[in-house]
Structure formats: structure tokens, C-alpha cells
Image (tube, rainbow, N blue to C red; front, side, top):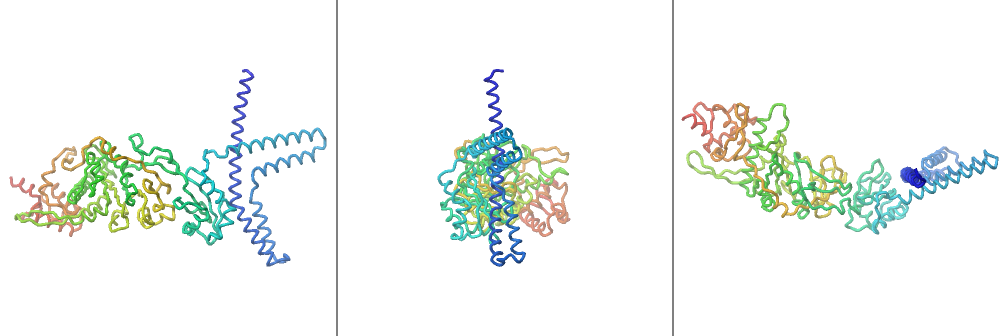
Length: 595
């Protein structure tokens, strides 16, 4: 090995060792800095306590003053020296020890030479640590530099009282990819909730702009809060246009991670008008309609978003279509649950019976328009009468029972606090909440939970449009920049056959699946007023022989009153025939028996 190679290898090892040592130096320096920021206020408290004790007992006669002095001394011992001061003291101690215990001049020369070498190495490490202190490569902007300066403990202490923040003290602020993060120490009169209500005072103390998003939440230990100023985003510079290669919902603005929401969850998507609710849902709608084992059903009375997806999804855009598709979905759900193999908790999606995602766009409008929908029916005597039908009971049933049958309900609304923006029977079934900007904290609490504000889920402070909070029980309250999926991209997606029960798979007695047309049965059947009517009719149709009314209570699991009302409606419309012995059968079954 040549001299040049030896020198290059030695230099590489030396550089690696220097960086490793500098990293250890920075880590220890940061640890000591954090402890000093945490414990120095305790020293100040101990000094004030000693001053009060001296005022009460100037001669030191009682134990009050002695106890205060001991507490001050203990508080001082708990505050570590800065690392540079600790290294200096250690080096000086080595030099003094060598001078005292080694009287011979040559030995002293060696000791002082070693001390000089140690001091030089320490200075080099300090220089490397300071030069490479910003390991993330983040450089503060002019705004961030001003905020960092005003967040320093001394500046905060000098101005907190006149801003109504006496009793609070900041720690050392840090610049991160999500903005500026700073711990705030609170005395006994302050809590994180109270500090959050004083946000205007904090903004005035810092001279922060009104549009700067500020987040205040409880700290990692009692008596502390965490203040975050969202001066930057980890999603900055990321291409947020949706493409098949970038199929995530969005990008976490704090960690920069891709955020996805898997299928199989019951979703609530909320946001004020213009917040980007429809755009944010498009990547999810694509996932729900892609693949042989996925099918999409959209209920959209506004006919705007649903029209974009009508080449890939079943779309209901009138009240009558809404009631019809909900009846089909409920019948499909009950049929799947009835043939679900014993011991299996969830239906396994197949090409014939896929996972169905039901999206209700603007739920409040759907509940208003599809609550009492008039249907004309013809009875057995040829008379026509009007029956009011509602889609709400079927949707509630899908929300409660649909997950086991792989029929998932997604509810979208921009008015979560008005009327039935989120029906009471559906809200408790929601597993994942996606909230874009809303107008008031009350709306944020309805969507994200009553503890939303206390835990930092402040959707009323989100910018508009395209930024959301996703609460699924796992994520932190970090904003997500959602991907943008243009209308032209949706229209250009490949066509898919929309789901329908016109041709639905049935199961024969032998267990082999076969396809059976059910169109004629649906045409002759009386319109179902609710889910109970569909269940009773299905039980009569699938029975091998005419059944008694009391047996239907056991078969369907419904109450006697619900079965009685359903039988009355079905017999009046002529769909079900009651024999002389009281047994019930469908008209088709009665005609087959007569033949």
C-alpha cells in the first residue's frame, strides 16, 4: 500500500471518527440544554422562596430559611453545566492535578502537553458540532428568525406579563419540517386549554401574522404545553396531482409520509363549501371502483360528482332512484348474511359479489329529498294508491350491518350540525373521519369527536382548500395535503360495469352458485316501505312451502308488529296471497302450485 493510500485511508477514518464524536457531542449538548431549560425555572422558584424566607426570618432562627437554602442548593445541583463548560472544567482539573501531583518538570511538561491536546480536540469537536448543528438542512426564513427570537425564554419573560401571559415561560424553540415547535411551562393558574384560549395574546406577543396557523396542546408531562407554529409544510415541493402511480389520498404535512385510507372502513367526509371535499374524495372513489372485486354506488342528488363516475359506478340522482338502490343494497346485504358460512365473520368479495362501497354525497340533502317519496301501487282489485317510502331506514341498516357483508357506507356532508347532516343511527358506526376546513369549532367536534379541540384536532383552523385532518384512531392531528384529481382524469378512466341486482347470484340447495334473473320478481313485488318489508318478502319467496305468519317472526328476527305491517302491505298490493288455512305464499308461487 502506497503512502498516498495510507494517508487517504487514515483521513477517511479520522473524518468518520470526528463526525461520530461530533454527533455524540451534539446529542449530549442537546440533552443538557433540554435539562437546563426544564430545571432553571425551578432554580428561579427556589430563589424566590429563599427571598421570602429571608424576609420572614432574617436572622435564620427558624428552619424555614435553612430548608429554603437547602432546596435552592439542590435545585442548582440538578441543573447541569453546558457541555463546553463541563469539558473546560474537566480539562482544567486534569492540568491542576498534574501540576500538583507531578512535581518533576519533565512530567509536568508531558501532562500540560496532554491537556493542550485534549483542549484542542475539544475545541475541534465544538467547531464541528456548531458547524453541522443543523442536520436537517433547514434554514429559517426571515419570518421564522423573528419568531424564534421572540420565543426565546428571556424575550418571553420580559413581555409575557404585559400581554396577559404571566405565569408562562417558553423553553428552547426548535425549527422542524412542520414549523416551529416550542414547549411552554405553565404555573398552577394555567392549563393547556386556558393557554389555547389566549391564542390572540400569544400572537400579539410574537408579532405573528393572523393567517399563521397555531396549534396548542398538552405537553408530554404535567405543567407543560406544546406550541406549534405551522410556518412550513413537509409536503412543500411534492407534486400533489393524482396519477395511477401516486394513488395515496395525500401527504402528511408534518412527516411527509403518503397517507392512505384502506377500503372496508365506514367513512365520514365533511367540509365547508369550497374546502375541496369532492376533490379529496376522488382518489378514494377510484380505489372503491377499481378491480374485479370492488363496486361503487354513488347517491348524488346534485348530479355533479355522480355524473363524472357514471361510466364506472351505479349512480342514483333522483329520490326514486335513491329508494330503489337502497332497497337493492339492503336485500343484497341480508342475502349475503343469510348465506355467510358458519364461523366466518366477514363476507369474502368475489367477482360475482364484490365489495360494494356506497357513497352518499351531501347526506343532509338526501335525507330531506328521499324521506317521503311517493310511489303509486296497484292493488289486487285494480285500484291505485300512493305509498310514501323512505331511504333512511335502509341506509341506517347498511351502516349497522353492512360491514360484515362487505357493503360499506361513506357519508359526505358540508352541514354536519344542521338537521340530519349526520343521522344519529349512522354517526356511531363511523370508523374514520376525514374533515376538511369547517366554519366553527362545533362542526369540528361533531365530525372529529367531542375531545377534538383538547387534543389538537382544530379543523376550523385549516386553510381552504385541499387540507384535511384524518382521525382513524392511529394518526396524530397532523394536517394532510390531499391530492388533486382533475375532472378530465376521472372522465378518462376506463369504463366498468356498474353493480346491479338485476342479475344476482343465488345459492341452490346443493350449494352451487348459479345466476337467476330477479327482474320479474322485483317488477311484480310491491315497493318496500322499509327493510322489514324486503326481509319478509324474501323469507316467503325462499320458503319451500307456504309459511304461517307466526313462523316469519322466527325466520326474519323481526317483531310481531313489524311482520304484521309488512304482511298487510304485501297482501294489499297482491304480491303475497293468504290461503284459506292462513298460510302465506307469493302470487308466483301460488300460480305455480295451481299449474
